[in-house]
Amino acid sequence: MTLRVGVPTEVKPMEGRVGLTPAAVADVIAQGVRAGIQRGAGIASGYTDADYQAAGAELLDDADALYDWAQIVVKVKEPYGHEINLLRADHLLFCFLHLAANAELTRRLCEIGLTAVAFETLEDHGRLPILVPMSDIAGRISVQVAAHLLHTTQGGRGILLGGLASVERGNVVVLGAGHAGGASVRAAAALGANVSVFDTNPVRLEQMHGIGPNVTALTPTAHAIDAAVAEADALIGAVLLPGAAAPRLVSRAQVARMRSGSVIADIAVDQGGCIETTRATTYDAPTYVDEGVVHFCVTNMPGAVPRSATQALTAAMLPYLRLLLDPAWREDPRLRDAINVDRGRIVHPALQN
Ligand SMILES: NC(=O)c1ccc[n+]([C@@H]2O[C@H](COP(=O)([O-])OP(=O)(O)OC[C@H]3O[C@@H](n4cnc5c(N)ncnc54)[C@H](O)[C@@H]3O)[C@@H](O)[C@H]2O)c1
Image (cartoon, rainbow, N blue to C red; front, side, top):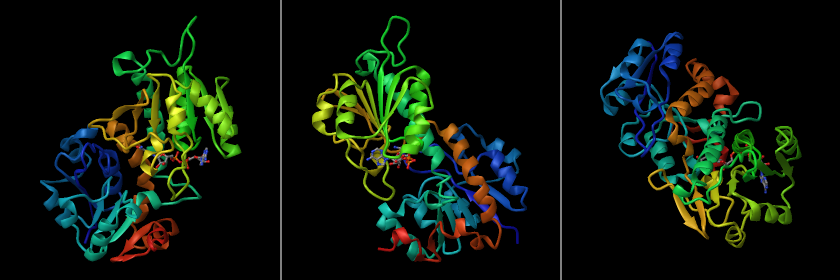
């Protein structure tokens, strides 16, 4: 019988991404499987049901019908609310799961007895290829948002980040020069801001230094961070210690010394944040003011650009979905090591404690 791949509508609040674009649907169908999409699943990403039908997808009326029909479920976020009740032991689930932070969902998936492969644990040659584009998007958004929040109409101190003739440039300070921080640095440098970036990894610092003459790449000593933060118009947090809480690099006292109307965008908020005044926000109410500084600490920054994020996510994930369609997929070490729950048993080392 032909394998059936189903793509449901995302149900987490403000989540507009969809598991597959129509082009990706056509791609998997060309591999000899059937693809089904829940009606309306692509709308927030700008893809209509007709687009999916033209690509060869079968339309399923609602989540109940979709989960009932599918054997492999491809989606973006972890199962949420009612959709957990629709999962079965014979489903193979492929999506972001973040189970280390969700004991209840882990327990439910084990009870159901299914197999779940997590995007965020899929490693290929030392990289996390499905996570990378989301960090890249978050990095770019942090600069776009910071530039906007610096407008007085948004509570900012009323400067153009990039400056112009006879006008001083804005100062952007970025903590962490990985995928998110590196994207922030490139975006801020392209705007013409003065950018200072800190990272413990000298290779990353060299890469940042090469971006352009308006980028200063620095070792994160307490003194250097203190001096840079005091002058920052926009401070962006993007450090990561894999698997651990983000290190606190900026204290409340340092935030209090920033100029009133400056902006903080802490991308690392999903790991607790690297600035003492950070607290998690959502796109319903994305900002707050603390110590006179406008804070933007949204935990799902890519959610604001669902079309771009869907395209980036699909492009990164599709090569691995193709492998997953092979009955012998468990023989591929990248997929095998990304299994979090195998027929109801927790198998990923990060979850076994
Ligand atoms: N809020 C969102 O929507 C969103 C989206 C994507 C990623 N993120 C988060 O952004 C953070 C960064 O992700 P990434 O993919 O860029 O990680 P990454 O591993 O690519 O980069 C992290 C960088 O931090 C550096 N670092 C670690 N400790 C440091 C320290 N003490 N001082 C300076 N630099 C230090 C590392 O050397 C590395 O270069 C993560 O917490 C990730 O979960 C958030």
